[in-house]
Length: 467
Image (cartoon, rainbow, N blue to C red; front, side, top):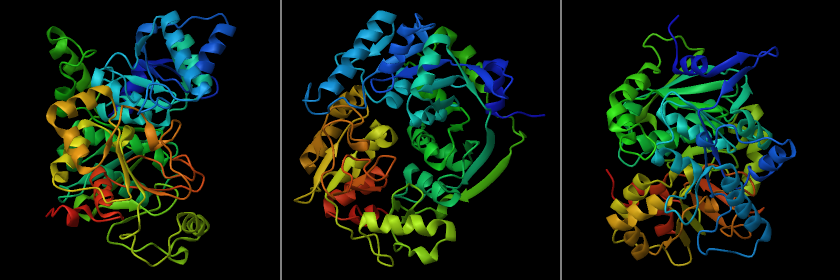
């Protein structure tokens, strides 16, 4: 039988089948950060164990690291950062600390360092580890006890997921981006639609995407219930990796590419399910509710619960109450208090370049707090060198240091009261951005910029005259 990429990687990394039906899988690269690793290292010490493969373990600080000042009055957060520094030094782990110029969100630095490679397994104590699937890796988030297991054994026990092929065909219209594609997919398949599946993304739309656009889609696979999402590696992938610090050296490059290509799904591979979408049907998309599946195009009206399926009505009523939105009214024109551009979904250089390309000459509306948080120090440095950062500053955005920032607000960047945030991040759950009453509307980076300029949820195609 012809095989998928998941089949091939699973076979290559299987240590042994387990009696309970799971498989013990070897982990090619383990990414750790300050939040889910301190307890894991503590358990390791209690058991008298060492990190089995420190050369396969890579650390950074991202979740709670401040984006404005070096230190802040949160003793617990500071202790977690100090603990990671101590643990990396003691166990000999590569640490991309704030002083290295290579610190950033774990799902940004893995690819930009070339640690993320096709055909390997990657684990990290963060649910958006699915990002790395954009390279043809099988990557998934794990819990703290599993972080301990991977540190000690470099393996983990997993049930093999089924594979759903998700095709998107055609070229997106101007002003429509990868973020709109994944919000559209989650809307159609549901936030639980991917449970038990790995999503293999393909089709001509993905062929057109650059590597960072593929990362945006794979990043939010978990929001659709799929723990794993991936794209078969191709020339776009290989070009992105070439020359990266941890990528194979040039004398080994041809052999590496040949091996990476061998992991791609066979042309006539068998899938457990297949779905297809047409790119021209996808419009700029925003959320109206309290999970990423509650989304509509910018041209639609907020749905009434009675218009939805019976199983979705209670959640819709809860969402309307929390978001202070009225069913039947356009989402466009909803007042915005904060605009956040960043996160592991959309804080990469190409995201910032695309916004800057349109932003010049515009100003953030008075009363709107607009911040840009680069995904890594390398992204920030490149944006400075290219003049991108200055365009944001001239437009009235605050230009911050690298980190997760307001995506999950485990740092000083938080909403207050019932502020509404236009956000390029990945989750709009209640309280996600630091205030229990705070409201989040997910959208593409350019739509965030449009909201910041107009002071309300807007169609970026109109604001920036995109046709």
